[in-house]
Structures are given as C-alpha cells and as structure tokens.
Length: 206
Image (cartoon, rainbow, N blue to C red; front, side):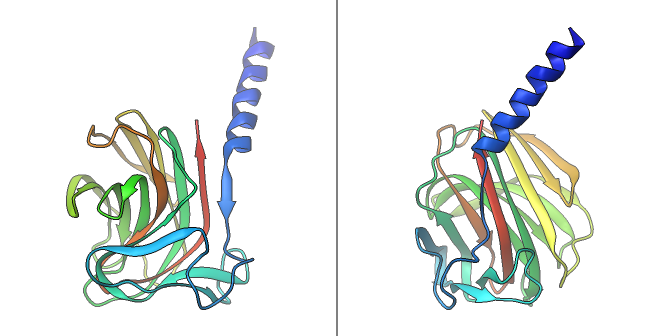
C-alpha cells in the first residue's frame, strides 16, 4: 500500500511539473514589452513594461521591468486560461516613493478585473485582493519583511474559492473569495510609481 501511495504521489508530482511553464524573458528583444503579452494598466497613468538586460537577473540575461507610473500597471500572458492551478514569479523592488509593490495576477478577465497578490517593500506586507471594474479590495494580508533591492519569490495556488499565498518559501496567507470563479489569464502587477524587475514567471494548471 505504501509503495502504491508513493507511486501515485510521484505521478501527481510529475503531472504537475509537466503542466508547468516558465517564462524567463531571455529570448525576447530588449527595449520592448514581451511579445504575446498585454502590457497595460488598470486606471490612469502610463505603465512602461519592457524587457531589459540586468546583471542581477535570476536567469540571465533578461528581466521584465516596469518603470512607468499608473494606478496599477499590469502585464498578462495572452495565451493562458487557467481556472485552478498556480502562478509564481521572482521579483525585485528597485524604487518608488509612493509604493514598491510587485505581484502576480490570475483569473484575469481584462485589465480591470482579476485577482492579485502582491508584496510591498515600503509597507512590509503581503496582501491578496480582487479588482472589479478597476476597484481593488483587499480580503487578507500578512505583515512580513519585504526588502528593497533584493530578489523575492511570490507564489499563489488557487483552486475553486480557496487561495494559498507563499512568500520566499513561507506560507503567509490562506483565504477564500468567490468573486472570479472562471478560468482566466495570468500575469504580473505593480502599483503607482513602483519600479520592479520580474524574472522566471511560472504557471500551471491542475
């Protein structure tokens, strides 16, 4: 029985790995947004999403950088459509006087409707929200140190109305919400004047 259980576990793990995809931005042209992604914002302002070379990249040479100013800059992958699964990214807060927040979005309908979880280096917390018609509402947060100028990993696992947020390998949030029940796109997010680098964007479905 134990052998069978281990075999089934291995099959589940293997299936999960097979379903996962990682975008490291390294084969993309520097100076432009990633092809096949919608690089835009929620609300007003002008987001600036571009592939750039960076010596600190977690997988060299390129990162995705957001350096514009907008209510909520968002960038999502057009060919994704996930209901239950996960999304993960490595991110590095660089600058921002109003905010230094970066995170992931999922079940994205469009630039104004999605779930988001982010970590903020000025507030030292991780929060999960739903954004409906451009209006962001938090439904849980967790206080933890988020260092600026350092690479971090943020991951969200989602199934049905249940969500689990992991920050730098530690589970920080478990929450439920029923705002968006259907499959949608996945991507990355910042706020206001946050200058954030992203690398190794990974996602998968269950």
